[in-house]
Image (cartoon, rainbow over all chains, first blue to last red; front, side, top):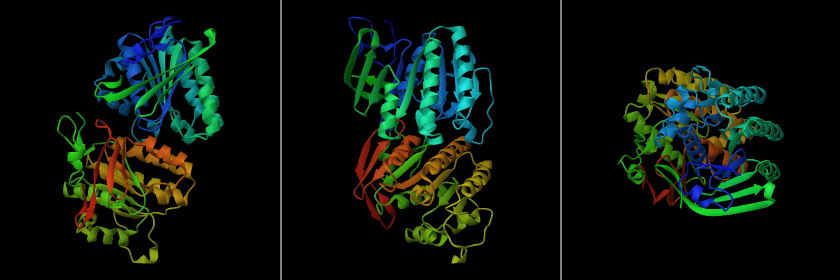
Length: 237
Length: 233
């Protein structure tokens, strides 16, 4: 089993085991969830940036914020993305800027879609997956977040889109990290949601809870530690 | 460094100052102010927009709780006169609640009427408002006071979508939006959605003001009072 560097200081040390170096299990799927404003997007962006700095491309589906906002949020932490967009290491699907009234210039690797049009979103995920797969057979795949998808579509539709998305990226060798704000769907949907992932990471503002399901070893592993959000991003203590 | 704009609330900019010494509301980010009813959310917002107006930052104001007359009375109570800003079109007011019979000023370039139970109409008028106000101003403040009434009159998930579109448009145009919401007035799913959509969360409970989240600074709090001059920390 292989883990890839998370990019979060302290995280890889926390997740190290006898079987493998620490990090996020490669080619697995992880749900990162928790109450609002606990650092889920920061975690996603930090993970993305770490990959980019290691020549791992990224498929980034953004439904909460437009590409400009995401870039600006990353810049607050000195994670500069412009070059990676230019050299096409990121394939960015912007599912929300269509609401902003601004002009959107589609490029090869910067495409507009609509959070209220899951069919279009999935077509673009398909194109995006092939695009990053061509450059590398391991890549990182971010979906930030499910919240807006749930606001614009029926719950069961979102679950179906998510299943299709997860299948698509894992088949292509991607490592998926998907963000979700706890409490924005009913408990039944939330439970179903969590069951779709190999790993879950919960951020509650003070502690990070990691739960990994190693099917091959028939083992569920849980870890917990305190974390803080600094001007360098999330730091696990 | 995250650029900030002056809040106009004495003590607030000091409370929110970051390592580089700047305080206030982070420019071009979205803020939710919430808490129980009658704790000063509208006062906070009015103080915030009045500060903007006196700094030549125009304001796009969607009022859903108080019609024009009540809004003006509320501002006058704290000696924040708004007529001249309406006349100069630096205050763009979308009044969704006044009855036509209430003797309000006739519609002008910057005083527009809409209807609380017609979110589509509100969004169309708001869209024109954003274009109007951002045409000559890279910076502006934008207010919805409050989301509570919008939620009460309409299907809740529709309002979440409307608010998302609202925030995206203001952000694109360079504005700094703030939304007021009365804690507990919608179910917890909607309340959590609201919180997840914004960058900064301020809660006030009548005694203390809590910064529950803010870009670049994290959690802070301070006691506050409501005086003749508005909120003071």
